[in-house]
Length: 505
Ligand SMILES: NC(=O)NCCC[C@H](N)C(=O)O
Image (cartoon, rainbow, N blue to C red; front, side, top):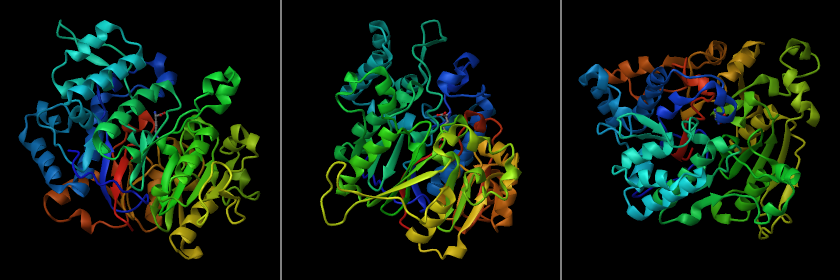
């Protein structure tokens, strides 16, 4: 599973070859209203329906990345009795598809747990993290099967002697959003430092997957960020302002040699500083330019990938209320309600989307905080112009050929409603072919008006199965996933993917 791991991501839109996902696990079915805020949920989710929706996502990924395995799951769905039709999607089941291209964190974890010394380290680390008793720790050591242990370490659920389940620690209901846990930067992996305790165990497990799996011979390619060693000496107030947190939804390998980082509800200014320092001081990362954008700290847009993603070199999808072009003084009245974002949290920063750029000097070696150039470009004065500028400067697109597709067709209130259900959070399978949710109808129309085909994943499966079409034939298409339950966890296909390998454009 971990041999010859090729990890290379230098854009958001190169043909996707390998990624990490995580299928919704039993922990999601244990989220209760009293824990919504702490566990970062806004609603309860109907787990079995969510799994059906998610399995379509997995099958789609398999068709594009690992055709034989797609055919395997398609056949299992037909061949198996109704009760077992979904078994091939479960990482702890013998029927699991075991792709080497579409990897599940749970399966990867079970693989590294096969080694005794790793198993001991992980159990000890998780128990220390969770403050578990010696009795609980012993119970974990007694789980024989690595697939079972991996499931327990993620869900926090363990089988007891009476044949039912006990909770030994909190679930990880956000683990399906693998984007937020780590980000491939060329051939390196930047590990997140989660903003909230609800997501900290995710980072811990991913660190082990990196250390003992993906990068076991190449540990120096794992980039970790954390508070400085004297952080504990700061006062409580200082610790709040100096906290280093960074989540992958705020980091995009946006163009070759160009990294884009968001400062948001989850990623602090200190987190951004740490990344800049780490990346620009290490020439092997291959990064020469870093853009930083600051968005309001708001639950509706916890990461930058909830307000825009890239579709093609020349095309983006964007939440229009964050576009300085849309928000001209003349048309501001259209947003009488929508502009609330601009007048609340964001107002404190004058609601500018602030864009800063750091360039690595080519000739002189980098020295901490002194030697990089800081440029507040006069061509980039907001989020839309930043995206346009990337198409023009990094991808060589003529200025008049850049297209911005807006959430909800830029009509209030659909723009806001659909941004909430991840209209802007699309995953590119290759340039021009993106995956999104079927519920965002106004955004979908906007895609059609801009010349894109729109296809349901299910329709594609039928066409692939009958050999009428192959993934290679599909171009300029928005592929729709069912999303009644999936969207309730508040992330889309972009959030549900950690790309490890994309082709060079
Ligand atoms: N990149 C993303 O925007 N990820 C979505 C994360 C949703 C999750 N419920 C959270 O609040 O962390």
